[in-house]
Image (cartoon, rainbow, N blue to C red; front, side):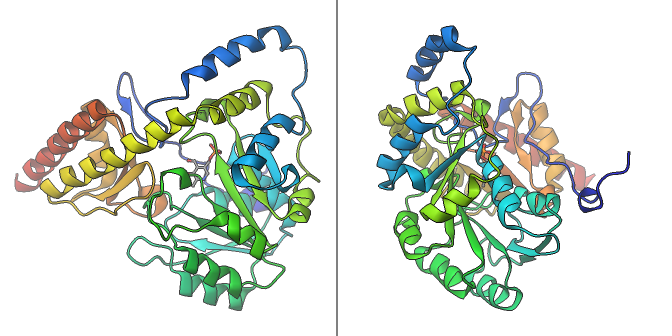
Length: 360
Ligand SMILES: Cc1ncc(COP(=O)(O)O)c(C=O)c1O
């Protein structure tokens, strides 16, 4: 069959992989898993599996409304935040219109643009960071339909500050939607990290995306959400599939929000783990980006794919960043203490092999 023209150039998403018993540090999942209360709550669902889920995820939206001090009508829940990106592009992007983001960021922004026959434009990064002045300039000259900001950025872990996000939004025409993807925001502790809750009051053309896949450890169930101006969110419901979020995901998310101690403990471990990884990289003489997420990107003195393959042989799955346009970088999820021991061992061994290869 001939593919629809618009999608013939799409590169299928390359997920983080693993092999055998290797520790999986390639997809930024929470190594501590979900709150133990989630499994108990899911067991209670077994007698109602024949009933369709709540199409509006009402209970969850109520909880999210109190979490973010918004009204439930300002929130939409999706089958992962990936689905909300697709709903956003499907709602607002006409064929041939432009969307804008940065180089070296999450690939779904480009992919959903292409699915809806849009034109994806990216500006270069500076030192692993989104370049706010360049994005503002591009927003002014291109009048894109959508601007995608990934904050903290996957894969570099760097952030745009509150002021930088405002610079970009202010440069956008009123008809440009700004999507602030905060999948990793729970891990950010930089005081200049944006207060997105305040920004949605200021800008009716802003939508913020969050996910339960990372901090809350529910990646397998696929659940994320968006919040913003009420009229904007209402428009997104136009094309939402009625039963897009299954009952297990809704129950799990509600339960996870009730165990914030578990979440806080994951954040604390992550903060300590990130620092430990920096020390390891410094000892090995490697450059890296200080990260505000649950992963660190590190530059290796060889093809990232080779280093990642050698680390896999040593039992650690990491993400080579060639598909992000960074062929000499790998991204490593912050694991447990034990996982970080394994990273140290596997990376040291992979680099030794590299030195050996070079000198032969
Ligand atoms: C920046 C970013 N946004 C969104 C997602 C997707 O999240 P979800 O699992 O909710 O679809 C990811 C997943 O890795 C991500 O890195």
